[in-house]
Image 1 (tube, rainbow, N blue to C red):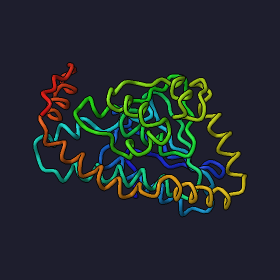
Image 2: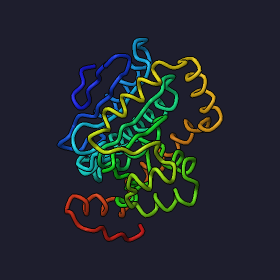
Image 3: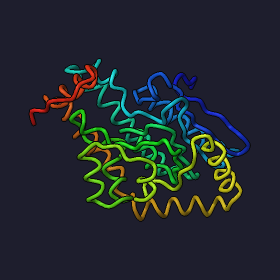
Length: 262
C-alpha cells in the first residue's frame, strides 16, 4: 500500500508508524485507519522490526475522528461511518494482539480515537504538552477505538466514567498519576527518550515479550473483540440522534452544543 497520511520508517530494529496529516492534526478517517492497520501488519510480519513505535507528526498526536468526514456524512448513509468505526476497532484490537511491543509517543493532543490509540499501546510516553481527552460525549457519541473497554481497566471504573462522561482534557501529569501512561518528558526529549526505550526492548527476550503480550490478552482483553462489535453497533445507532447532529454542527460552527437529550 502507498501511504498518503502516515509514514512507516525503520531505524535500526524499530518500526516507526508516524501519523502524517498535520494540517488535520492527524485525525482519523477511513484512509488513516486503513493505513495504520496495514502498517501494523507490516511491522508484525517484518522480522527485522523488533519493536513498533506509533507517534504523530506536527503539533498533535491525533485529534480523534475527522469531524469534516463526520459532517460530510451527516444525515446520510450509515455505511461510511460504520466502516470507520469498524476500522477503528480493528486497529485497537490489532495493537493488543500484535506480538511485538508497541510504544506510543504522544505529543500534544490525543483526543477521542487518538487517546484510545495511546491506551492500546503496551507503553505510552507523553511529552509535557500532551492532553488526553475522551471527547466523544461532546458530539453526542460514545468512546470508540475500544476506549470504554481499555480506560476502566487502566484507571478504574469511576474515574474512567468521569473522564468519558465529562469529555474533559487530562494533562500529562494527571495521566501519569492515574496510570494512563508510563512516563512524561519534555517535548524536545520525546523522540530520543522513545528511541532509547524501544532499543532497550528490541534487545530483550523477544519470545518472552510475545508470550507476555499473549498472556495479558488472555487475562485482560479476551472479550475485547466481542466488545468492539457492540461498540460499533451502538456508535452507528447514535449517529441518528439529534444530539449527534447538534454536536457535529456546533463543532463546525465553533460554538457550544445545546443538547436536547434526543
